[in-house]
Every structure is written in C-alpha cells, then in structure tokens.
Amino acid sequence: MTVEPRRAGPGAIPRWIRQSFALMARGLGFWLGLILIVCLGMFLGQRFPLFDGMLALLAFFSSILIASRLDRAQRTTLGDVLQMLRTHAAAMLLLAAIIAIALALVWMLLLARPGVPWWTPVWSDRNLVRALSADWFEASRQLFLYSGYALGLSYFGLNIPGLTGFFQFPCAALLGLPLRPAYRLSAIAQLLNLPSILGIGLMFVTLPVLCLVFAPPLVPALYCFLGALTYVSFREIFLGIGENRVLEPQRAAAIMAPR
Image (cartoon, rainbow, N blue to C red; front, side):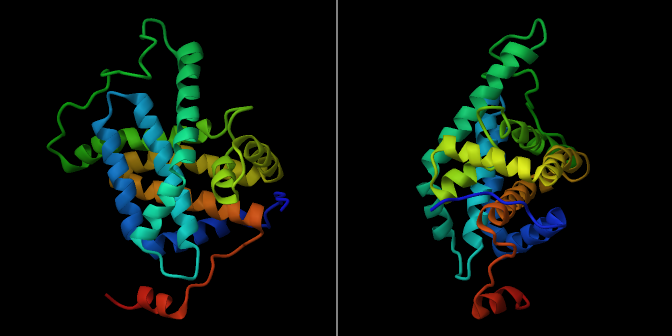
C-alpha cells in the first residue's frame, strides 16, 4: 500500500479542534488519569530533566494512540488502551529517547550559558521544588510546571531538521512504517499543510504557558487535547478521513445519558 499525504481542506484548524474535543469526551476519565500519573511522575523526577523530557514525550505519544483507539465504533475499555500502549511501547521509548537526547545535546553545545555545568540536562537541582506552597493555586503550579513547559518544548523536539517530523510517530505507529520513511512522509505532509501545522505549533507553545498562568491543573488535559489534535490532523492528511467515526447506537446512548 502506498501512502501519500494530502492537503487538508479549508477550515482545518477549527475542524480539528472540534473533533479533538469530541474524542476527548469519549474516554476522558481513564485518558486523563493516565496522563495525570505521568505529569506527577515528572514532578517527582524534577532533578532529572532528560528523564522528564522523555516522560513528556511518552505522555504525548500515548495521547495520540489513545485518540486513535477512541476513534472507532466499538466501546473502548482501559484494557484496550493499555494493550495498545504495550504494543507500541518500544517505538514510543525509542523516539522519545532520540528526541530527548538530541535536545540535550543541542542545549549542551549551543544554548548553555557560561558557568552552567554541561550535565545540567541530565541532573540538576537549580529549580528544585522542595516544599509545596500552602496556597493551592501556587502548589498546583509547582506540580505541573515541569510537565507544562516540557509539553511546549516538545513541539521543537518533534521538528528537528533531518531527524524528526511532527507526524513521524503516528506514521510509524499507526501505519507501521520505519522511522526514516515516516520522517520523509511527515516532512512532505508538513510542507503541504504548512499554515495549519504552524497553527498547531502556536498552540503547543502558547497553551501550556496560558494553563500554567491561569489554570495549572488543566495541563494533563492539555496533553490529551494536543494528542487528539495531532491524531485527527494525521488522520485527515494521511488517511483522508475528515470526521470522527460514528459510535455504535448503544455506545452513544450510554455517553449521552444523564448521570
């Protein structure tokens, strides 16, 4: 089978946002729970920026896979999601390690300020939170600070020239392609849809900052949203599917029924 990316139709960004929220509504409970655990893990591992970066990428990749699992007519269970994550664990770990190490090397060689130890991306306690604030809002900001900024920086890690592409992971995981062909297709898709991809990139950069300033507890939900946004854009560009798959009637009735 030959896969060729295409140009998305007019109004892509608003359409993808709407579809992303619809997918989130289908399984937000266990989806948000899994990402929340990862975000709290990033807080506990704040001495190890490289480890935190890998966790952020794993959370984002997991969100893409979960969105693809929710986009089907059948009912999705936690067991289905965990099985899918186990199936693609090796690909997620490999790409997360490549991106995190590449960004660490860029920082060490090009961006590190004089006097800052070169090993800072591997281990650092310069900005360590030693005690949570008594104010709940400030405490929530402390909890999600690392995961919020790591999500914003991940967009740049997904666009390292010659190494990574924004759609590389879904092409590899959902289409079964090796990483290099997946990178090539991702690069073509990004050029064909440059305004839309830049719009997504702007959301990656600005939304985490806005969440940290105004509503830090929403950072885990932001991982879910941006993962779903990446999936639905990939689905339209590579598979030509412009709308979420319709739920089975009994599943739709269960979701819409009053609690």
